[in-house]
Amino acid sequence: MDLKPLLGKLATGGRAALTILFALLVLGVMVWAYVRGFTLANSEYRLIAFGFYGLLLGLHVLVQSLFAFVEHRRMRSRTEPCSYTKTIGLTISAYQEDPAYLKECLNSVRALQYPPELLRIIMVVDGNTEEDVYMMQMFREVFADQNPAFYKWDHNYHTWDPRRQTEEQQGEQAADQSVGPALGAGEEDPQRIEVEELIRTTRCVCIMQQWGGKREVMYTAFKALGDSVDYVQVCDSDTKLDPLATVELCRVLESNPKYGAVGGDVKILNLKDSYVSFMSSLRYWMAFNVERACQSFFNCVSCISGPLGLYRNDLLQQFLESWYNQKFLGTHCTFGDDRHLTNRMLSLGYATKYTARSKCSTETPAQFLRWLNQQTRWTKSYFREWLYNALWWHKHSLWMPYESIVSGIFPFFVTGTVIKLFWTGSLWDILWVLCCIQIIGLIKAFYACLLRKNFIMIFMSLYSMLYMTSLLPAKYFAIITMNKSSWGTSGRRKIVGNYMPLLPLSVWAAILLAGLCYTIYRETREDWTTPAKKRGNPVLDLRLRCLCPLLAFHDHALLDMVPEVVS
Image (cartoon, rainbow, N blue to C red; front, side, top):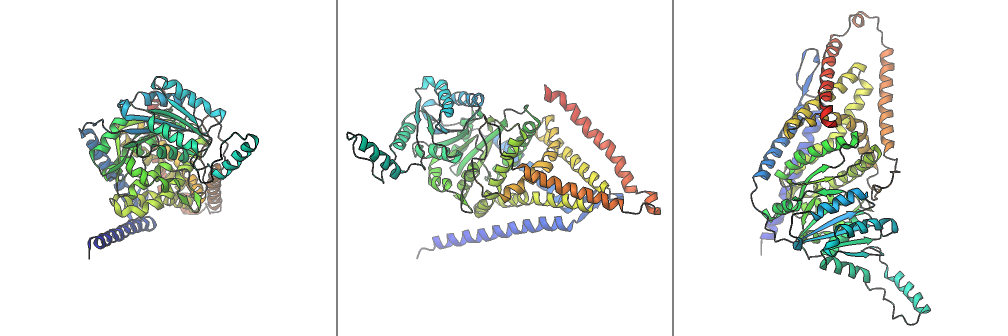
């Protein structure tokens, strides 16, 4: 009897059990530290207190930054050259794209420094109507000297109905007896065969297909490529690639056969368009160069971002069907395609990496409503994929369950703290805590300045305002509507018409306003004629003395940066 399979199953089960125990331990410690509110140190009159929960979060930020720093040193020290032997299928997903962004994208793809004979370019347009033709025409213009191929597909991989086609052809036969026999109900779509032949034999191809959502577009490119290439690169139609983007991604995958996918550094093209797009650019830098760089140190990047990623094609083809057919609570999933692609790769036990040496720039919503819709959609996929990701914690580093627990419970702790403050605290408590949050944000922003070596990160301190007023309530709306699937956004040529994400912001504002009014009412009912009230509160006096210089310092630091941003 061969004991190896049995021992392997026992080892896997034991590791899974230990991982679950570790995750429960992390969760228990975090909840205990938050609920217990254990204070490690405080100043006179308890003006400032430092608790155990704050210590845990502070250590988390420091440790995360340390591992990110080490990973960046690894990236810079990597000397293995690209072999330039791997064939790559570069797929571009397009949906009613802004012509200016699309042209930038296509020109950047054309300028990639990778051997043309090894690089295939496939753009799939999500739509085959007259208003979508401009994207195909632009593809024709940019790649005019590459002998590009074009095809307008009446269907897509999942809308072809052979029975309906048979009925239509039988009707045509009745009108014209010269037509040959109709296709049988079990035959394939002849257009699909033509699409696959074009993609597998032509270097530059643009396909227009029936609308089906971004995942449908990506599926078409992946499925049609089949096993004809070694790697598959993903790219969005609003993304401008650095000339060395593909080379740097390829170098990482070639360096280790256990690396299944790798993502690059995503920057913002339109950071000067609005306050929202500018703050997004700062948040992107932190997300990629600290959070994902740290994850990359442990070989478990949680999301290979859609604008810039490279996958081993033989592995991708293994889970292509299950990725496309993903369901949650009985609903077919359409958004979160990049997160689920990454999770599927992690589920096979392969590592996912990040490299800051591969760069791109992409468009981000400048309008508040578009940004809110985007964040709601991303939050839905985050929590949905969090549940799926937990199934594979035991196959990877303990950092994966640890970080998942910490980042997953943080919004709920913040919500509880704010609601309790507005309903049970005093007016001075509310003012003091909100100002302290901003000051702590300023300290973290200074820390980010040191990491990036750019003082512009000081504006990251303003992100807390956007998070507290908009992103936090949007998370709860996303959780409640998690099984509502759609493309999730309108084309960039259209005005956003989905105002539903504003509802949780209104509810959140109502809860806080009601708490504030209740606190004011409660304080007006107090007896202010007692000797204690007349003497005043030394804590309040101290807080007032501290607030003025702190706020003045905060505003002065920000105002000093305005000329740099404007320039």
